View 1 (cartoon, one colour):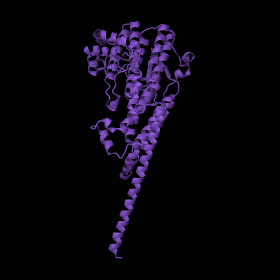
View 2 (tube, one colour):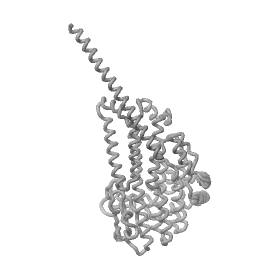
View 3 (cartoon, one colour):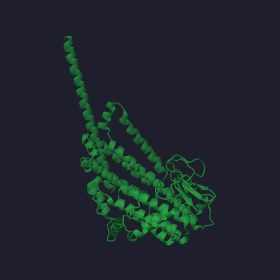
View 4 (cartoon, one colour):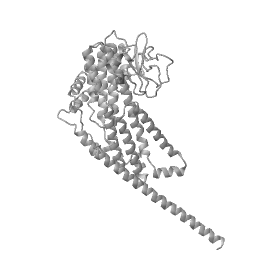
Length: 477
């Protein structure tokens, strides 16, 4: 055999080995894909057996089961139409600037007063929208959950225009509430605050994550109004008890769990039918280029299961586990940055890009829930101080322990007691927040004229922290 023949033979051997490797890789990828599909199907069956929603039809059935003869949806819709006729959208940025000036903040700090021009704008808004505000109060008084004709079959294309309407209406009621507080009309302030918190509670049947997050935002409005009310008005023990009951209307961890279960069902149906995203969606084109969704689908089920399970844990354990899940997410993302061959293999075999895109927002819900939990606990402390009368001035958190118990005094981000700080004219109780940095009770705010508040917005001790680093603060009279 001459040299030329040996070269030809060697070439065929090499080509044969390459072909064998490709066949072996194909078999391996096929087996892995099928095993991922089978494992994912088993998880879906387990979820169904446990009564969890796994399809868009399941979500629609569970939601519509809340429909009743007392469904307040038509009353809310009538109120929204009244509000829209007058242009009553205090949540609109340009409307805010026209009414309240370019102060950089919607409201001044709770302990500060509104300017005369702000009060005039608020009075004009309430006068113009008096009929709509009365209709919102009537709708909220119904108490039942709102059930609308939502098109769950559209999947991620489902339209939710009512969410913005609910939030705008809540902001309108907030204006009326803050005006009543400023004018010393205590009964009206309680009525408007009750309406505001009932509006967000009316959306409790809607198992959608964005709805849950908007509910948190509306509930936070109510907490802000409550803080201002406690600083400017005096309440009897009976009224304090009434206000305490309102805090029970806020979204809790079970609401977040239900929202995450719904997100899991939406995600499953997208992976089973990418066309739900719309053929013009970049995600649809990405899906068309993939060999399969099977591994991504399996990872989605596993990690969404972990996210749902977090709702059974207490704070700060929840956040510790979220940190671990986020580290795992960062590790997987790092796998995309290896050699071209490694990236290609990982893309074909271990692809979980969609899962990795969706998870951060889901984990973020727990951080936001922690903030609301902290604010609610701080509000209960302030209400207890109000119950004890104007002569009571807490010297330490332990002054509340006999009535509220030790758990109510704990910062959900650290598992340690909140910080209480006193100055000559105020008492602050605060949580250090998600960044775990104690900024001395700092929260940004303005004096109503566009400048930083000199007393109530500045840190109690130490220099002002960098922009965006603020604590979760509740001021007690």
